[in-house]
Length: 127
Image (cartoon, rainbow, N blue to C red):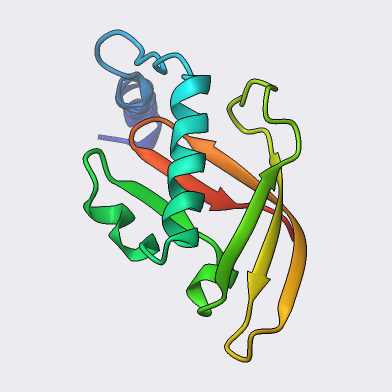
């Protein structure tokens, strides 16, 4: 069979393979209050020295923060706009008061993004 005769068959197979089967999967609605609760739970756990237990909660919360990972302790925090709804893919501004191993206080203006699906996640997003 010549290559020219195979071209239509290859095209049909390629087009057929590129289509998805079944209905498109819809994203579940974003739950602002669930996101706020996850952010507060993550920060409270860090403040209380229980940050590593977040992954064992029901439901678990994935918490990613470089200051937490390096061992800084959270003394206080303030969500800059506590009444503003949290939206998907938008930063939430938080002011952190941290202490290093020597007891020195460090103040940081940070940002977090909070995911509610497929699982809860609080991720530091400032650069």
